[in-house]
Structure formats: C-alpha cells, structure tokens
Amino acid sequence: MRLSDFNNRREQVAEQPPKQPHAPLSVAPMMDWTDRHERAFLRVISENVRLYTEMVTTGAILHGPRDRLLAFDPAEHPVALQLGGSDPAALAECARIGAGLGYDEINLNCGCPSDRVQSGRFGACLMAEPDLVADCVVAMRGAVDVPVTVKHRIAIDEMPEWDTLVGFVDTVAAAGCTHFIVHARKAWLDGLSPRENREVPPLHHDLVHRLKAERPDLHITINGGIETLDAAAGHLEHVDGVMLGRAAYQNPYLLAEVDRRFFGADAPAKSRHEIVDAYLPYIELEVATGTPLIAMTRHILGLFNGVRGARAWRRYLSENAPGFEGTPSGAARLVRDAAALVEDTATAQVA
Image 1: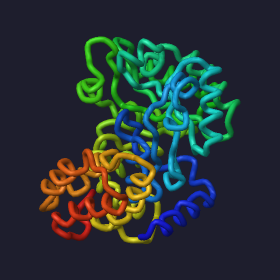
Image 2: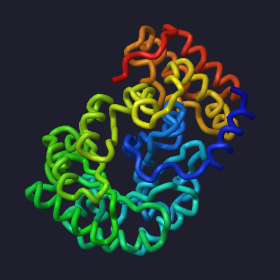
Image 3: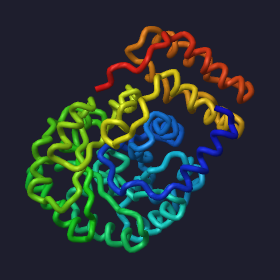
Image 4: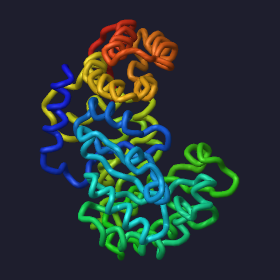
C-alpha cells in the first residue's frame, strides 16, 4: 500500500456515517498501552471493534499539551475518549473538547485504583460517591451529543459487592447514563497495587450478568479476565457487550476474526503478514513527522505470538527499532525485514 493509498483510506473512513453507538466487542483503555499508535495498529486488524484511549485527566487537557494528548487518526473510528476527573464543570469542558475533535464516545473512568488517581479524587474511589458521578454525567451529557458512558468496578474495599454495584448504577442511570462498562472485580484502594487489583480480587462475572438481567433497559458491557473470543461469545448471551483488555494487547491477532464473528463482515481475516504490510504506511507517515520508530514497534511485538519465528521477530525489532534515525522507507524496510524472519503462515486459531 502506497502512502497516497493510506491517506485515501483515512479520508474514506472519516466520511463514513457514525458506527453503531454500542459495539459488541471493544478494547479497554489501558494506561501506557492504548495510545494512538496502538489504536491505529488494532484498527488495521479489525475495522469494527471499538477502541478507547488511555485515560486522560481533565487537568492535563485543560492545562497541558492538549493537541498531543488528544491526537488520533481518522482511521481509528469508532474511538472513545476516556476522561479522568471528578469536577463536573471540568469534565463537561473536556467532553466538549473531545466531542469537538470527533471522538465517538466520552467515557468517565470510575475504576482505576492507582494512588495518583485516588489523590485526585477520581477513578475507583468515585464508586463511593455515586451522587457526584451522577452530577458529572449530567454536566457531560449537557455538553455533548455523543454518548457519555461510565466504566467502573463492582465495588471497592469492604463495600458489599451487589448492593454497591446496583446502587451505583441506579444512581448514575437516573442522571441519564444508559451504558455501563463493568470491570467484574472489586478494587482495593489500600493494600493492593494497580497490577494486583487487576489480578488478585476474584472475578464476579455472575454479578454483571445479574445486573443486565435486572436492568434490561441499560446497555451493559462486561470487562475483566476475558481472554478468548469463545469466552466473549458466551458472555454475550447474558450482556450487551464485551471489553477485552490485556489479552488483546498481548495477543493482538486475537482480533483478526472479530469482524466476521461479531460484526457480520464477509471479508476473510488478514494474515499476520498482511497486517504488517497494512500498518507500514502508518509507520512511514509517523516517522516522516518525527515520531520515533519504537513508538510504533513496541505495540506490534506480540503479533506473531505462537508462530515459528516469533522470538526472532521480537528480538530484531527490540534491537534495531530503538534509536532508529533513518528514512521513513528505511523504517518500513526494517519492520519488513523483521517479519521475514517469521514463518509465512495463514491465519491461526484465534478463538
């Protein structure tokens, strides 16, 4: 694909009508991972899966390098902006900015358990303040026409799980939110690190299924511990959407069958080598504007996981992409050389 072809594809995507407001499959917002280069890469694999930005705080948007923080490629649609904050006026202004830039959804983070987030009175600690979250939702919905959604845990600390979950959702739903993305774990704000909070608290998928059963008018997306498309299909028998997290990042080829399986697409899944070829024009364009090559290649290391030659692919990129100072075409050639070390197989089992 030539650079001009890639630009034409961008324009075509930008001119398409908005995608469905709620997707059955999405990829979770993940700090330091789902930046714009990762999202552009995942969009090459799936045209339909909904993508989310990393969480961006209201303070960073209002007082920091807004253009850099909120930049995205038109090819990323459908893409949602996740905000972190607890001041209704600030969230409304940031939602307005995000919608003005073209984001398809504004999502409020009520699930991140890090110390930094807690000190700023946002993230998972907001589970204890559903009335404040409701006020934030009212302000955000009043500022934008795109959907405003909330991502949260089932409870925090010693709070009872079901009563906390349903009470939080009912309060925020009364403010007009109709789409909730539920990470089916408690968050422990004291005693567990953010990583441990993703792994140690037990999963309670059953509570999210129950939430949908008892609140059928709400759109409920389940998140947490879902690692295969078969598992996602099983959850979709009980809820409206499934959000994949680290499984999609560490094994991005998991998404290769998503369009056919969940969105009714007819086109066959791309092979891994076809995905590399389709991503190269983006790499060339970014390197031409001064983006370090490593900013893109760090996201594609897992593409060939499970295929003979995957280790050689990872090693070649890890040794040669950092510090690369060549031309855009040289960057593409480097990635192509790395891919040549991998067995040229057709699509593999991704269920």
